[in-house]
Length: 30
Image (cartoon, rainbow, N blue to C red; front, side):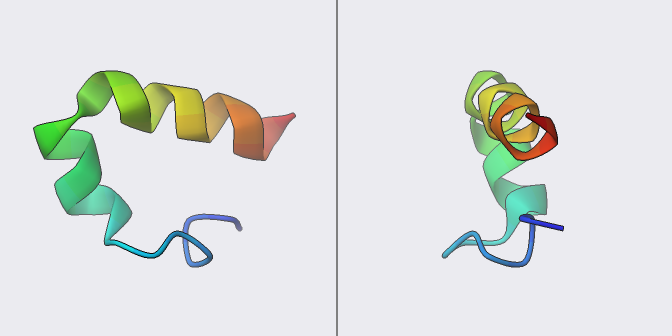
């Protein structure tokens, strides 16, 4: 999955920027 491709840990990113995490997830799914 693209989660591993992200430079920073998606878990922390989702916690700090949940809105950005949702965008990343949508981009990865697309």
